[in-house]
Image: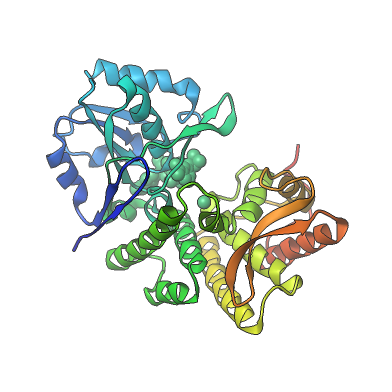
Length: 369
Ligand SMILES: NC(=O)c1ccc[n+]([C@@H]2O[C@H](COP(=O)([O-])OP(=O)(O)OC[C@H]3O[C@@H](n4cnc5c(N)ncnc54)[C@H](O)[C@@H]3O)[C@@H](O)[C@H]2O)c1
Ligand SMILES: [Zn+2]
């Protein structure tokens, strides 16, 4: 069975399709396209997709410095103004394709097939693409949506527990942000590892339709959409302080747990709110345990470095920390909290509580040069 719906945006509407076996379908419909493909997935690409550029999915390839090579390959393969691009891969391929398609001969149409669960559940729609510049992550970017996003569930088969749970963390974040009913509906679909294809299809549909609400009501990140940063300010600090030793989706999960603890410390929740937030906390903790059981090891974490990275986050302003936390009956809110020693002590205590619950070693300062 296939699901499909449209996303309305100021730069045009685009369609989203979710189902199984869709790669063959896309190649059939786009025999003359040029394929930008994560080289790890090249063996899955039918021969009919003859014009292809294989790209290693890493941060140095999604840089401004690496773009001329991609653009010249398009030229060598005969790309002209009417060429259609099909990009197949995770966030790195999405960012490269958005940029290359937007500038090549002033813009080519393109199709995106996300292949990581994080890409499928979240970033494939409403995506603001970003490119690294001389080592600075995501410094430049643009908005150039594909004409179609096609999600082939079969790509999930080769993802490991950490990648799947990272994607599920983004999905549950979106559903929790939409309210208690949306969160309950998400849990009722049975997010789990391993993730059966039927469950994946239902969860992805739910997550994307919910995200559609946020990006259509607030395309330019002014209000509602900011709530989708839930878990990110706390999580980014952990990613950065461990030199990305904790992967993005897992760090977002931990970030949501820290935010819940922080909200409780600040007495921001009613009793009902605390029970909703605790249900989310139990779910994310159980998912995180699965990542650890799969063999992923925590790096040692320097708590002072985490707090320093948190302090430097560019979303704060000079007077206030700006974080998304659960409030009142469990709904999320972007709150401003005074930058003072009391707040810093509470932040430290919240990180400490979550790290100790998960058995993350903060005893040794090993990650900071
Ligand atoms: N444009 C956006 O809206 C947006 C949003 C979030 C993140 N990003 C960017 O995306 C990047 C991270 O993206 P990501 O985590 O989706 O993936 P990625 O493209 O970095 O891929 C992660 C790893 O998974 C592998 N992989 C991809 N698909 C696979 C599959 N089906 N089976 C097995 N392995 C597979 C890749 O080869 C790579 O080694 C970052 O650079 C981030 O800045 C962009
Ligand atoms: Zn994220």
